Image (cartoon, rainbow, N blue to C red; front, side, top):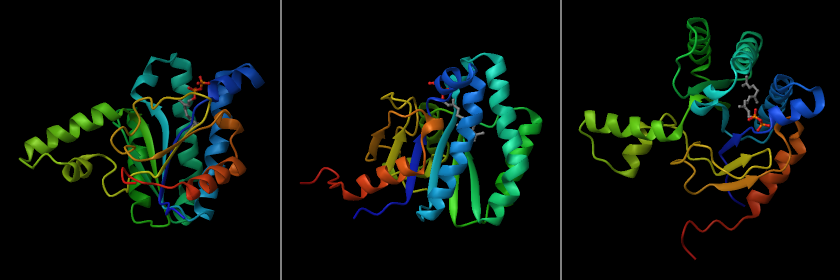
Length: 224
Ligand code: FPP
């Protein structure tokens, strides 16, 4: 059975779900947040130590203002209501991406990270304004400023996912098969599961099914 410490997820399909069921993309995001909570709970049950969620990419700024505003108000609301609960559950919140949001949101993100920084049960890496190519470029710049050797170990150390093992599993919901500038370095050897269901329809049973499948895969890492 394969060990499993880190699951990464591209939560795709909110917009389509919202349009189909409520005639509103934003309603899809609202429903998607419920799935986030279900998956966090299940991740704890499964004793997985790291969960990385792609919530907002650098490319997502090209969406209409009302949708961007709604997404960040959902996030703000979620943190205000749930951060104490996450803390009580010994969950650490770590933001990856560039925090250049409103002063208010930046402050809330920083205080949420600080509050939960010593927690050990589960680390949630929330990718916000995240793009993998720029993460890699920034890492290389820092290596060169520090006059460090450019090698795989050092590069991993300078990424925002430092101290996090690479994901053994990537799940992308929403019936789309691409990586969308997400964790390009870290996913080099991950098992990838493309799921037809839209994110708000994805549930614990689907999650468990994927993990069961993963556990049985023969992982060779290039060997035979
Ligand atoms: C992709 O679906 C999803 C997003 C860009 C946002 C993800 C946000 C959530 C799951 C809810 C909020 C989460 C937090 C942590 C506050 P899409 O909109 O691209 O769907 P589509 O492909 O159907 O258009």
